[in-house]
Length: 460
Image 1 (cartoon, rainbow, N blue to C red):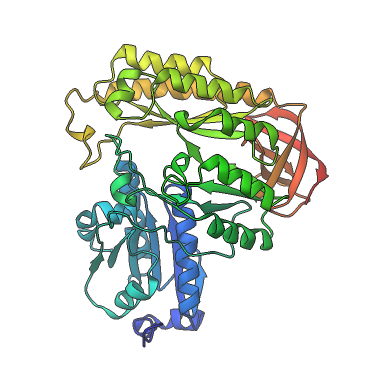
Image 2: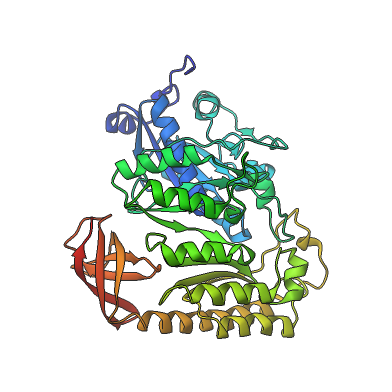
């Protein structure tokens, strides 16, 4: 039940210009980090709009409340969160700034020291808007709402009817992680692994299809672990088979997955179902057995080689991306070379290269033999240069081919709009179709680092 609350108690004390701009509560959102965070932000918006007369405004606008959904994968993400919070308060000193999400869950004391932040709300409470929004608006003092996860938490996420500002929607089907890799805080930030029911996923997808989305991305913290906790057990390939049958026009894409979860059964689904987008993002991290062991990853280098090589054989120009961490404690020159060689020899289409970041509370932060920052910078530069070369080779190889694509955002080039192909490549198409349109595009040329294409056919 909605509490007996005047949600404008603090708004009445705001400058008169704000009162004149909107009769409702002006709320701005910003999301840092992964696709799950983006889905969660939409869930918080939906919960807020359902309970209060709210106007959603842009982050750069003057608002009564700024909601910053945080990430804590790296120290840089933490720093960016603090910067954005201070920026919001400078924009409107009378506003309320609340930081929610992963950084809030794992390091609430650190955020509470930032004077510009009015509330810190962890992942365990962030979607319970009716609990924290009244306290934010009515209270004078900063407050922290962070609790520990239950040992076996239930999957709990609101249904959303739209995905504002996006042509492709994300759907959270799994949350949490049980692996506890030595460099990672996400198991603390997100809690134990848990899966969304098939029926709830279907209901969510139907809402998005009804809203006009032609492609959705299935996301999870440990996506490949989906369904192991369900009764009866429904594993990821099982789920994909069900969804492909239930939604005969919907295109499905997976977010990141571990190499050991790229199984023959999963690859068979890609081979037999073109609506399952020919693209995988591999949570690889390293090509060295020694580094992977110290990271406590559930696979070794040869398993990763096999998975990526097998995926590349599924279809022509199958998109393959990966996350790589450079400079993990104890990483020797030989171990780095194992990673460099794997990247050089496997057909990646892009890479995300991260410098190792010490996270307080992780096992790796206390390991000896931390790699010198200059060495990390040098190795990162080598891999980024290699990644650019691999991406260029992949993209130029697409010239002359026809790919399905979803039309997305405008660009700085007049007359052109960005689109994303089925194998996860950005192309430029004439701006004659609306955002979200599904098309067949013929890729014409690679010029100035961009792929230009023509619309061969509008599909939906």
